Image (cartoon, rainbow, N blue to C red):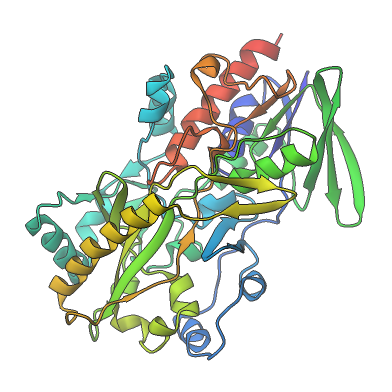
Length: 430
């Protein structure tokens, strides 16, 4: 049986591993360890919140090692580290976002149909919304913003509406990529954690395997096919270390929250992003931002129970990239103009909720949807393979996105990864 090495266990890597195992003997290499949710109580988080010193990126890594935070210009860039990748820290949103792919001739209808059959997607959480969420929804509707319940991947009947989605779901209500990893392992795949891939080994236009570091030791993993799905930050770094250039086309979907104080609102205990307002360049959604709560002085003077917050998530210009192992990303003038527009609209929602005019405050500018550094084009609509890659090396994560979604990318990543797996089977399973 031929062998396949899959680098990364997030939405893309876990999907590919699940689909390839059986046709190939799959080895999954994960840089992090098995995921364990943050178990700090609300009271303990409040104590961190009351510190006069903000939690700098290295401190966040120490408190919650599955969350990697780096800074570029005035923005914190976030990704998950560990089995399941960033899906373990995401809010579990399941939306189809492939219009840009359709525009270049890529039809993923079959892949999305399979994704919906493999992953439960529901808006059943709406039945248990808290009063604050209903009020925000009604305000947005009254403003003519056409809010819609956010489709969630998982099991609404198990959701405790505790607001800890981004810290690791405590009830198992939220689907994440570990479900696909477990399926792949049950079918015979091997999962090796704490294996950071340094580079792929190339020979005569193809790869022979990868070199990974486990602690102080390096190991070569031979493979007939390698699928790289280390995430929007990790994938271009592995390619760069392998001597393969990527595009200065990085997008990250920046987030900025508009918040205010309303005593006893307890909005932080709601499911994250329960509904969404879609605009041309951004979305709005209720969201309690823990990064802002622990880092921003304006948030630190209020207890969590008194904060109501609406996120602006931006579809940013695809400018930036990974060079010499560092992420370089800044907002453009257009980004700031669209972000300012979103902030004005979110401010109106929060003020109509009951925050006094002029008493709103902003959060920390952060982002967690990196991608686009190896964007698909019309030329790759069938092959899903960039010519700069060796013939048996594929990418299967958000690096393939032509431009920013400004929306949750997980379901679209799963669909793209299913297509990659199909292409790999058709080309190499013989």
